[in-house]
Image 1 (cartoon, rainbow, N blue to C red):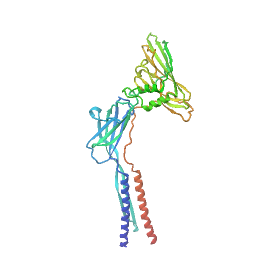
Image 2: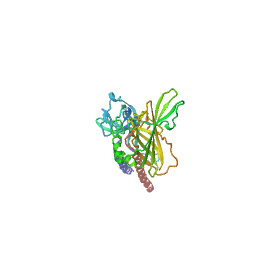
Image 3: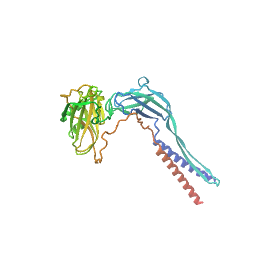
Length: 416
């Protein structure tokens, strides 16, 4: 009897060693948990150039490794990154923020006897989650380039731990997107007389070479090219697909007290000459300085983005059907009459348009919606290893081991 039990225990030990080895192998194959994981967020999430941004970076510490020093750097992607300091960026850090961490126990195996003298066996493997310390830093940063990805780096103990995009600046340094009351619905104050003092209708066109020259010479407020080579090529191709006409009118307004002002209204008509409906049509209009020297003085009933304060505007038409004509109207008001004789209104261009494959039954609201909200937080998913599959694998191995052992017990019981 004693001899039989001795052999059984040896067999049990062999089974335990096999299962333990498989578990250890699975853990090794799964790889270690990342020593540090980093989250970035910014407010606003899409700032304009020269606008101060509030940035938060959370460094989760998932290791016993001591942090002797860490450095945060931010800058344009592909450009020079600068070190963030308390003096220049109001850097402030705390390390009392709880962050999710992981813990792993060992494999357990044992056996015992019940009241009937029958031997039983058990297996276990420990896995759990806990909390570790983290470093949370806040600072301010001012980007200087429009339409640029700004990346952040975290260096811990002289090792680059993380690099990720923190935010992307708006296309123009002004980054303004606005909706105002439609000029066509402007009401004249009671007692005000209106006299049209200037009118003209201009249909302007460029050949591809002329249009390329005009677009290539356009720069943003920082002097950088306003359009990429690919955008210019697309705009040249689109010039053959759309037709524009520009109407200019200047009204002299005299109120009841005798005060005089001049309202300039520019109406741009666009016709879709393609063979498909187009949506999200982006129309770029360069406003002559004789009309307005700054975008801040311009109002429109169509959503527009300021590409340059000089000004260059980008208007958005949600839907433009085949053969359909729509108008884009903007206005300025000044106390002096603008001198518009001989002023050239450059041909508008379509920077982007998306073909509508399936006809749309009903037109959307023509004013659209604001697509550039600010003040929201964009949090990057922390890096690390998902151990869900590992846990499932361990459970399967344990069940298989128990089933294997029980099968041997059943065979011996049948022999008895």
